Amino acid sequence: MKQPVKVAELLSRRLQELKRSPDELAEAAHVPPEYIHDLIAGRRRPPLPGRTDVYERMTPFLKLGRNDLVSCARAERATAEPESAARGPGVQVERLLLGLCEPATAARLKQRRGSADGAELVGFIQRLLDVAQGAVRRLLNDVVALRVTASQRGVAYIEMRLKVLEFLDASPDTLTAADFAEFVQPMIGSWDVDLETGVLRVVLRTTEQREKARRRPASGPTW
Image (cartoon, rainbow, N blue to C red; front, side, top):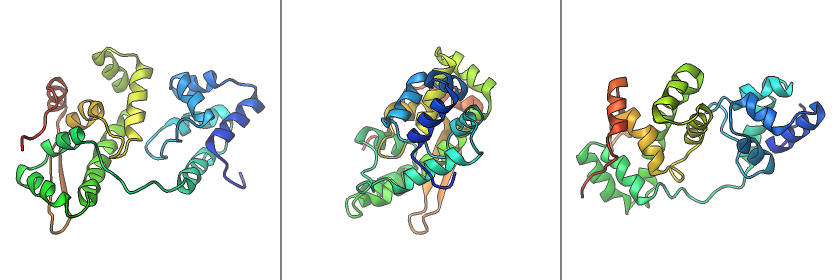
């Protein structure tokens, strides 16, 4: 490809050229058909390369160059209209995230939030989310583990994959309490940050601790 185009345009064009359907592409990418239909219609933003495996799965099916989809996705996300300043998570999600933080640091972060317009806390939450997403991303490379996880949750494999993919594309603004309960709380045991240097320390849970955390209702600090 000489010039990147929108992912929706590339998908639609290649499906027409190959005389294949969106549902067939969905099967190849291991996602629900609605996922592909939403991508083609522009209702879903192309996922962030590096945080997904859908481009890797789509590429051979669509007979594209190895980096065609990734290049288009990066270009599209880079040229999208800039969003307003990050608002950070909602009150409930913020409370849950601070519930995993060292109590004294959490109290200081809450006190400092007003004077810093929330940007400092949002920055730390983004870095914390990066850690959680990096750990969860490995699930996509282990189909057996993902199928076992789906079975334990009582959901279909494709549904579980979609939950993982949507969490991997979440930001502090879009993170939900359900995301926290399903992915963040089971992965992250605790976190702390040196407010002078900005060094973030994250303690990940063991496999046994993750299962216990998933069974335990999400809770946050009492202020």
